Image (cartoon, rainbow, N blue to C red; front, side, top):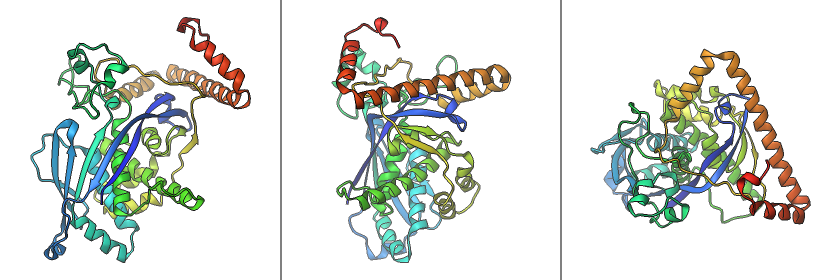
Length: 383
């Protein structure tokens, strides 16, 4: 059996930095750029002597990075050990694998665990692929003598090999290894791997073949499980509890989002300190997830177009650290700036919702205005 799952990237339209603190809200849009995870067995058959094995073979392949890593997953402790000479590890995928298998152990009864053991003894062959929009291909496009336009990017083959950043940037190593465009590749990748593995192992059923209400309700519950496991794995891989908006949009799509209380992932952090992973996952799945999300979409006939600045990306943790340092150094001005930003974000949200309401109730008039605006130069459009 082979399972393919995908998850979208994100664009945080409002709420930058503010979204780190409750109850500030942010509007996050999911993109048409997606990350894909493909899961299949390494071994087609399970040999009789293999039932005595205590390790699962795991192969992780990233064609765009020209990397292949081999691991051994302990079936007793659910820990992952790299056994290949891969130059670079992928903590997001590694944690996704461990947390997903632990979720299966935490939720299955005895009979299902026996079936799970058989599946795991066949090994896990995982391939990850990201749409070209997640990465900067500026150098390749310029080398081909093409203009830096979306049309030129579209001429590249799907899942083109990725450009790596140089080690030094502005006198310091502050860029990620890969030249990225800031669409939430790590969250989309983690979510895609978690979703594919949970479906492959039988923890959830993400099939969209059935449209009846019962199946829709079950799929909603299954998505909640994907969300909790992906948030946990992503948090541990990052080494901190972020706001989680990127994982939330990767699971549920575009939304108005208010973060969960960081304490809900204290169990995940306990895993790092030695608590058995299966017990940790049980606590996470039964935890009080108090985030708030409301479905959101741009008004009709509006498209968000993004530009890539060509600097190869930046390090989110270092940028967040700089903002927090400023808040601590100048609390009075930072609080006033935060208040003004929150008010402006709220006003933009109100206006966008008004446009959606106008489109629904007076479509012809709305379409006429949009058509007229679309023919104006940007300087002529009053917002």
